[in-house]
Length: 355
Ligand code: FES
Ligand SMILES: [Fe+2]
Image (cartoon, rainbow, N blue to C red; front, side, top):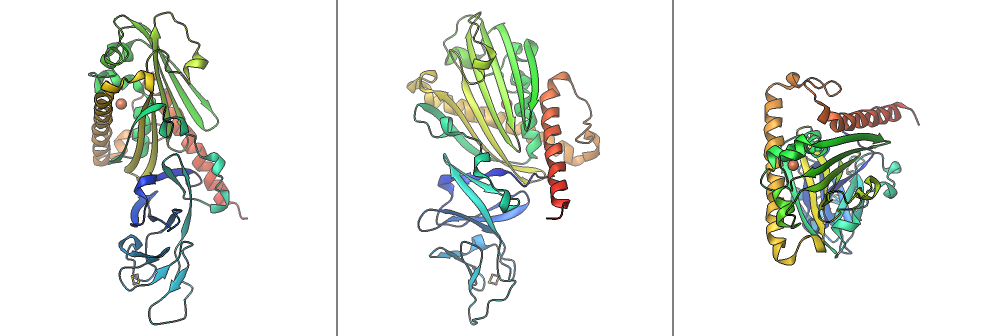
């Protein structure tokens, strides 16, 4: 179940160049490259002649030459040359996908090209491209479906058990007041912890010696984006909730994830952990980066282990609408799944409507 009429991150800008790059996105094989002028291009990654991926081929100017029998395709996917003949048959073409490039990410539109509105691309400028922020970024190939990754990011009680040496402690799972709200295609989970001991990272980087007030605000944006605002301040400082949504208070950081399904059970995870310059002292940036990469790895181990378990008996988990075994902390992930199901239903209805 993939939502097609949405923008997905296809690649980091620096990974798309003059060397063709093959990548499976929503179960479709795509070939990414840049023209000589630097414009990104995405074509169907399957030669219509004998099915060799075009990413095995070479660029001739801005056209792709298949590595098997030399048929060439231009950036629109039209065939421009078949060795030994002048006639170009109707089957000799590949699909072209719409792309947009913003703030170090190349976004791809996998659905109806007439619906590709660039105003729908989420704005990650502040943290991916703002020099006043210190960003740790990466990309992970995840052996788990994208909704398991979203589940993880919408229930941050797991910090206590999965990230206990850095961002989690007992108070994160035991003392949070949780509010969950769906607004259109977004789900916001606000976790507020009052007068709790600071977790290790908050002592290390925030310098706290006493209890703190802490917040975690996760916002899911369909189809696969999560923005988490982690903030803290002295007990009783009283920053209003509306301000906390875009503030890290005295110390904190933001986490951005863009999840692009590869297949039903594998995902391309593009991520960024960023703090304002004042929040991560220069001499501690290397340690901060190492710790955040390790936090990502701790999560990866969890959802890949879940997927393995699910694969052994997919029926045991219940269905998406009625998962087996839920607790109140699951409200965010349940609402996220509801939004995805609604959008999927809308897309199917649209596809079924002639014209
Ligand atoms: S398979 Fe591509 S040209 Fe023959
Ligand atoms: Fe985590």
